[in-house]
Image (cartoon, rainbow, N blue to C red; front, side, top):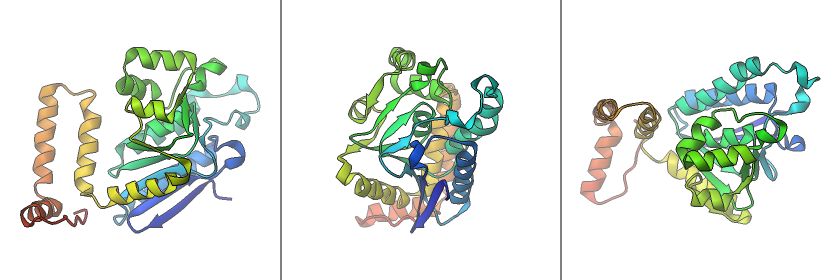
Length: 258
């Protein structure tokens, strides 16, 4: 059984975690298949949006501790360096938007996986938790980088030190989640958003992603220079010409991603 269901429909690639018996907890094989699927979608010029979601009622329960025979023999350094770091870096560097379809619980590294996406659409019965502290570990998978920037120092510290649950509604109020929907309307809403992203000017989205990610370490001067360079590139695209033409003709633009 494939641990990642890969499906392409029009310009959207949907990557679905498929290990429901363990709440999609992460193993080396699952993460390897996820990386392969991300690269496949990233390299396909016809794909303009990537969706990451899961089957059933859970998104991801984090690292599968049953993967290791003895907890005192876990190679934390090797596991993080060979699995988690490349995965998170790949997600953040892909030139296409990644929409997380948060269908249920995202715990520990599962929450990190959701936060690494560019946008989160959630079912109202979903929640996130930095559960690492409950087993004496620190958050990883980039969550100590994402959370303080998303929600501020004290709130991030409180959530990481307590491991408390954050409901989808609360996360939406805090700005982590773009939109929350009832469970019976979640799949349709996720499809609508993914389709919308796939119709946007793909190269502009890639440059927006590049600029925002760079802003966290750039000075204002450096960021202004980056904006100038990226805007110069964007101004040479077919989608820019189409966008201006559509504006002048008072019609919807038909972006082709070029």
